[in-house]
Image (cartoon, rainbow, N blue to C red):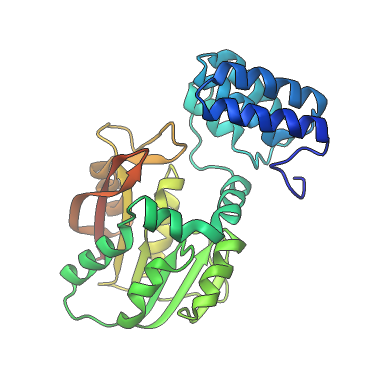
Length: 304
């Protein structure tokens, strides 16, 4: 991935891309796509520009042309740091993967880390940490946890709420940028860079509380996370998380936002397979997206 993947190396391509952005801002996606196509012809290795071209082709109603751009980007790097495979799945040209490419998720949040809280909390009305804390308190009033694990801890919004309720607080996240923001707060006893479903060698557990606030929307198949959480929890330990709630019968679906939605009844079934029984399941809006509330499920399970 280039050092600045958002800008082409060629100044002529950069100028045309800037004009294209202006046209897109005005809602003329067809004209924006024409100019961006010229930009990527000048700088064919600028994959972020090609992804932008694909998005504008979609907005202009040219789905097949958009898919062609995404296929080109995906072929350039099977690790798919730009999420081209997800775009193809969202368009119906590929089956939705069980999980997004780790390189895509890490890159997305690395670039977003410095403005994450301002955007999510200040502009999008993000509520997941508060909703989860309320659900945990309802399940175990006045409980104090010996050790809590914050999966996908991000900048530490959930950790800020948990700090006073646990003796030891550990966070894990796939984005180094987000971890850097969390580290500045000084609220975690330990922070680790890694996948939420993978073991942390230096943290074998047990944890009597495992939380995942607005993290599982970036995973499709949650079986590995449920299995990992169950292995870390002692009998009576809690797993609490939020998901975007779907009304379908499939365990998960990939939405146009490139986030996953999950069917809560299927999650209850999956959790039971790993010795986790449901304590509470509340439907709540988690945040806003393009001005509309995003419906979610706030779920708390206990290890049998």
